[in-house]
Amino acid sequence: MTGTGVGADVDERLDEVVRACEAIERYVEGAHPSDVVLDAVRMRLIEIGAVVAALPDVLTASEPEIPWARLAGVGDRLTGRCQSVTPSVLLGTARVDVPRLREAAERLRAFGASSGNVGGVADPAG
Image (cartoon, rainbow, N blue to C red):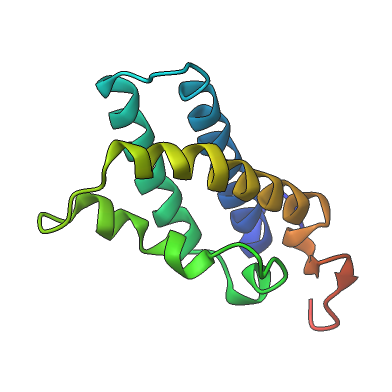
C-alpha cells in the first residue's frame, strides 16, 4: 500500500518526523548553540508536534515509552505567549528526547506502519 492511501500518508508523516529529528540532532552537535540554532530547534519541534498529533493512536501505542501526547502538544507550548521555554529545556529535549523519537519513528517505518504491521504483528483488519 506504500505510495497511495492512508498507509502512505502515515509513512510520509513518519518520514517527516525522522527528517526533523535528524535536522535537530545536526543543529545541536556543537557545545553552545547560538540563538539562531535554538530558534531552528524550536521550529522543528513545533513541526514534529503537528505531525505527531496526526499519527493514528494504534501506531503510537506500539511505542509506549515515547510521550506521544506530550509531543503532540509541544507546538502549543512553544508558541504560547504565557510560557517561556528556556534554552536548557530546548537543548535537553533536542539531545535526549529527539534521538529516542527518531529511533521510534524509524522502527515504526521499518515494521511496516503503512501496511498495518505495527510492532511487527500484522493487523488483521488491514
